[in-house]
Image 1 (spheres, rainbow, N blue to C red):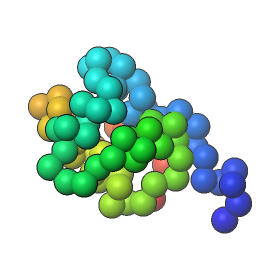
Image 2 (cartoon, rainbow, N blue to C red; image 1 turned 180 degrees about the vertical axis):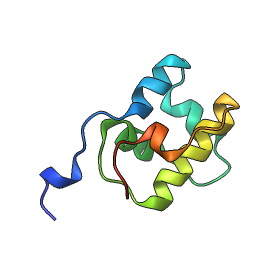
Image 3 (tube, helix red, strand yellow; image 1 turned 60 degrees about the horizontal axis):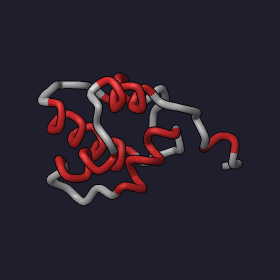
Image 4 (cartoon, rainbow, N blue to C red; image 1 turned 180 degrees about the horizontal axis):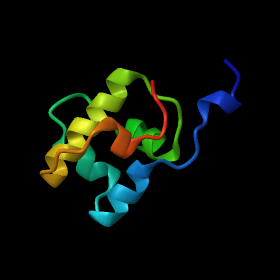
Length: 79
């Protein structure tokens, strides 16, 4: 897999974080799983993530915002 296919550009997650005035730290704190700042930063920038990491970010965002977003609300690609 070449480098270009791993970069999907800015993701809808970044806009959701801005709309809810959340930082990566807020997601890390809201997560009950092992989620790091680096994972959240990569997710927002559009770096290719595994399905497991995408799920962690999704669950953390839902916990932090008390919402029920789905993966397609956060990412414009599939794992």
